[in-house]
Length: 285
Image (cartoon, rainbow, N blue to C red):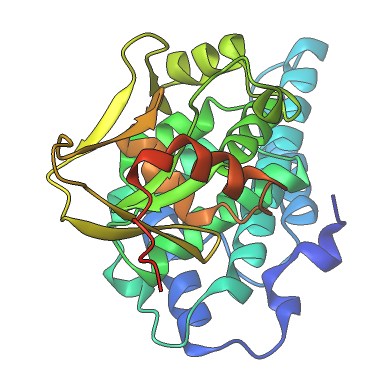
């Protein structure tokens, strides 16, 4: 993590209007936490002043001193975490973003949950959520923010790997047809880890019955990383398409908005084979 001088938001230079609005919104919701001064230095100076004042009134024990020092350090670190997350979110703001429309309660809850996050990769994840909500208020529910606070780095990486198998079939859907297949297992997607993601509230996992899309048109396209696959419901077929063993929860669906992952080699053909009964009949020439 960076030191005070690089962390302070005042060092970001001239900010765009959306960035200024975001900082103002955050300060309005959780207090003037982004004033242009060095938080650790100020916090320690204020703590020392409080010690001097307190010592004139009561006897301060070593235990009190250690507790106060711990409190000051913890709050300074949390301040630094909040500033780092905000810094990382600023380049992600869209030109037409209007952070002023964000709900104060949402902002307060967001920083209450994210202020203990010090890992840079996890801070980047939180920054994406903050920017996403600023760009389009209402994109991330408080429940999703609260769920994100329960994820550790391994959980986040596992969910990102799951999203590598995501197709757009009406909406973004990771297609897991067989949790024992090597194409999934090679990336850590297996029965145990899918059960774990289910317990976290990111997916619904049903290894027996699975899930299907219904109400589909006679002819439609599903896409994988921008590559379309034309499908059709043939005469005599049920108007349904099997989509595998998982469904994303609302929180999982919301978090896919910030996940950018590469495709899996061979997965397009793997899914094409799974759906071969829906392949259009090629007309003979």
